[in-house]
Image (tube, rainbow, N blue to C red; front, side, top):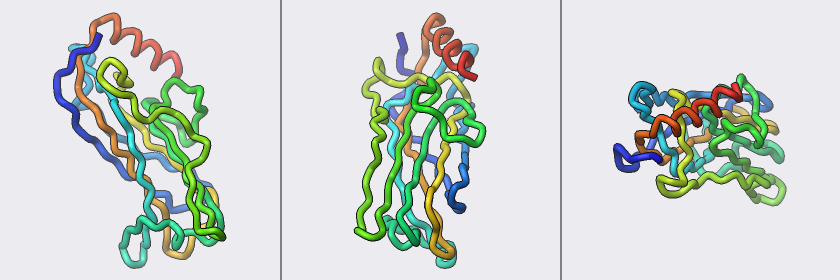
Length: 181
């Protein structure tokens, strides 16, 4: 059973998707929060994703996504606790923490969430997603063509807390995590 060492806090990281059909990854360093010797881990309670258009020429963000694409497109993104090695990973992968996809229909001026129903909100401490790795990986890709000097940026906002795990819980999470790598 986990015992909380801190209250909830937020971590965020931004991923730049500047080339269509190219998978990009950035990392969130958890090294200051995870401690093997003390069985200290991160409990992830919730992950939110925000997709914004970015105009490189004007250094300007926009929450309206339509000016950045020249045709219908989609933006997909994932947060995992193992390095995906430049790939979008399967939903059956144990290291997947949260994911999402946004479809942009230029012709009808509509955005829709795709069929991604992976839980991004885990709940209270006993329901949280425990992470013992010292790094999170935010990975994304855009399918479709960009307007000149435009790109999409995905921000992951992670609600977490530092927890102390019992030795058995720590070991079971570590074994599950390393078995997949």
